[in-house]
Image (tube, rainbow, N blue to C red; front, side):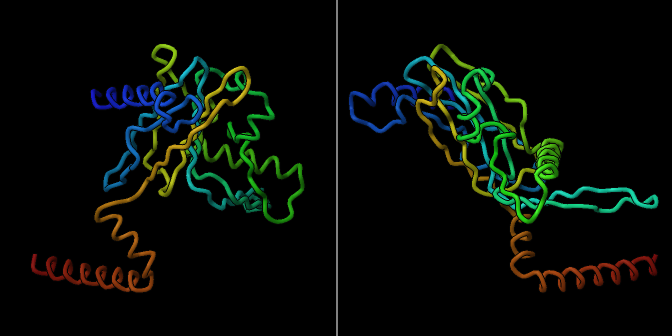
Length: 250
C-alpha cells in the first residue's frame, strides 16, 4: 500500500510540474495501474488491479477496460416436439472479450448519448459488427443476448463501478479480473470529463497472460495438437496398464 501511495504522489508531481518543464502529459491527466501484467498460474481464482491517477483541475473521471476483440456467436433455441434445438444464430466480430466500466458520477450525467456512443462508453454503446444476414429486429435481440451472457459470466460490467477522489485531484478505482478472464493485450482508457465534454484521455496498457507449467502445456497443445493428442493417449494407456498391474498384485 505504501508503494502504491508513493506511485500516486509521483504521478501527481509529474502532472503539476510538467507545465513548467515542458514534460508530456495528456492535457491535465496522468493515469497508471498497480500492475501492467496479470499472471495466470495454476490455481488462479481472480485478482484486483488498482487504477489511479491525477487531474490538473477539478472534473470527473470515466475508466473503461477492454479485453482483446473476439468473434462471438449467439444462438437462439426453440422447442420442437419436446426437444430444444438451435433455431437461429448471429455472429459478431470485434467484440471485446472483457469490458469493465467505472465513473466518478453516473455516466449519463457526464456525457451526452452521442459522446458515449462515439467513445464506446457503456456496454450498450459498443460497436458490435454483425456478420451474415440477420433481420434488424432479431439483431437487437441477439445483441442483448450477447451482453447478457457476458454479464452472467462476469466478463462485462453494465452498471459502472465507482471512481473515488482524494481531494479534487487524485482518483482511484479497482478493477476485478475473474478466474475465467481471457488472456491477451488489454486497454485501460481513462477519460477526463468536464462540462459535458471529454477534455483529454489516456490509454494504459495491461497484459493478461498464462505463465508456468500450465501455460507451457497450453501453448504446446495449440502449437502441436496432433502430437499432444498422441501423448495424451499414450499417457492414459500407461496409467491404465500401471494401475492394472498394481491392483492385480493387491
